Image (cartoon, rainbow, N blue to C red):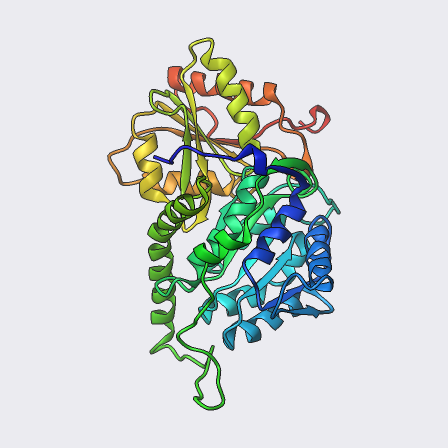
Amino acid sequence: MPRENKLDKEKMVVVEGSYAVAHAVKTCRPNVISAYPITPQTHIVEDLSQFMADGEIPNCEYINVESEFSALSALVGSAAVGARCYSATTAQGLALMHEVLFNMSGMRLPTVMTIVNRALSAPINIWNDQQDSISQRDTGWIQLYAEDIQEISDMTAQAYKISEDKDVLMPAMTCMDGFILSHVYEPVVLLEQDLTDKFLPKYEPEYTLDPKDPLSYGAFADPNYYTEFRYLQEQAMQNALKKIEDVANEFYDIYGRYYGGLIDEYRTEDADIIIMAMGSVIGTVKDVIDKLRNRNVKVGLLKVRAFRPFPADAIRNVVRDAKVIVTLDKNITLGLNEGALCTETKSILYNTDINVPVIGYMLGHGGRDIKVDTIERIIDEAHEVIRNGIKTESQFIDLREEIL
């Protein structure tokens, strides 16, 4: 179980979410920053640019590029020569990086990139859902989802330590909901430089590109070898499961607060209904749970922080005694009519001794508000599943009536 948080209120400052991320990146002492502005990510790289101009990030190169594809491509070369690298993007920018995401992962180059989640076009939309990062879930990047600004700040340093571990060596996305977290101002304890230096030592890669000791990254692999590369990537993801937990505990030991690990639980101990969700919607769900618990409704929350690698064993341990599982997805797998969290959850329960029904809801697309009464309605429908079984396995909710 996660340890108790100890936030020092005297150290709290009220800052924009994007600033908290940029500040966290600064304390991690990157060697190369390369990014292209795109709403709602732009404030992060603007703040980093100002830090660079003020001389606050020593031994770092800030690369101006012409596209997101170029931004990540520049980091492939930088990471290959042993640099600690950073980028940030969103939506179409992340989609444009698709090819390079595979290159970075396949070459086993640790890198951290903040994804400020935003809906993908068309139609054009700049507000939040999680379709952009979920669409990249098979590229071989670790994916961590933040509930609030404190978490995305602390997650940044942890992501570097996870990604750079010699038993992992996989790039990592730290995901925050666009505008909801990136542009909001909240009290946060910013990462202290001395503590971050203690927590995150200088990156010392075992292998780098060096003309004095030549080697190749991403060389040609025929059918005799290609499968083993994919196998080793999967083994690295499995190694990351334990590392994510270990790093969260190391972070706690140094900073005195716990914002990490694979999952979080909220009032799940005796819950008949367990809601599963990722990102900023967690706060709304917690409020509804508190309200309904006062009416003796046995509902709890399982917050999924790590979507890749997917924490199958941790989830199974939590949901085993529930009567129904409800997944909330701010994405959709078109053609299957369900969200990715719903699909993943059902898959890890199949062929096990856990016989708990799973129902899924797709909501919040394109920034549509997720209201308290919507969560309450979902919980009412979960009770109906307990009484009479599943009638609809996965569905949109809060659709405009004129299209129904």
